[in-house]
Image (tube, rainbow, N blue to C red; front, side, top):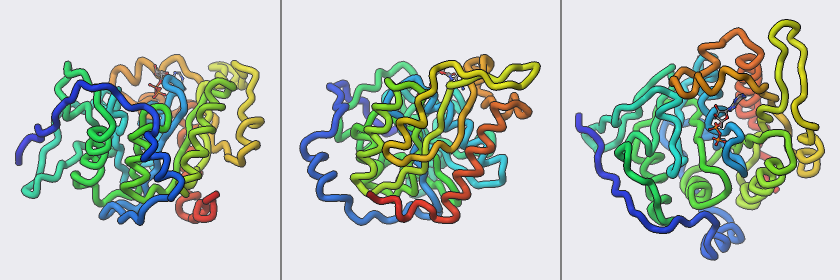
Length: 294
Ligand code: ADP
């Protein structure tokens, strides 16, 4: 077995918006894409803004699905700010097989790959569009994912090159949106959802994060914001799959590489992830998303 060391860092300006060529692709629609061998469903976790908990949701959802007995992969496609290695406590470079395919390391029952495992720790990751796209392709298609029931893909905020590259390269079963229940985050996230729909990629629904807290003694729910999630999601017909409470222990868990659904398995927080996982699996199994193309 060899260590994987072939990525080059290119310090050039970063393309954050779809180029005219990419916009043309959105107008024309996607080419036919072959499934990833041995991977049943690919679910992309996306949000319009950073800091709303997208990576936290990707990690805890992946671990919850693995706890439910699913075979799970977690691909960190946040090329610019990879956080999955820290949150999943995986730090070794992936091994490669004889065909030079990367073998994703496993922790908490989840196979993981991230640019953070390939780029050296102190390298600045500033890439231009085409390199970003080839990095995403390499992580997707240059690895031995099989057998996996659900491959969760964590993405950077917005709808830039990474998102387009994913949609162009593999058939995405559905996009799971993550947002806090406030206008500033919802508006931009749901606008991003429309881009996926234009490409014919279904939206699974929205995971609302950090909108409420659960009282530790009486278990009652207290809203933090004036919650506007329903107003926004109903406008473009997106289902809210779960409401994940704000919990003061989460950040410490993320920083220590222990997913909170493991460390605090008996809390309302972990329960909301089980609900999210079950709803997601049900939707994927019943192929409830096939007719979602708008
Ligand atoms: P994003 O991927 O959207 O940038 P992160 O997953 O990195 O967001 O989360 C941003 C911050 O919010 C992190 O410090 C994380 O620990 C914290 N966080 C995420 N979800 C929750 C939650 N439900 N309760 C408390 N803190 C949370």
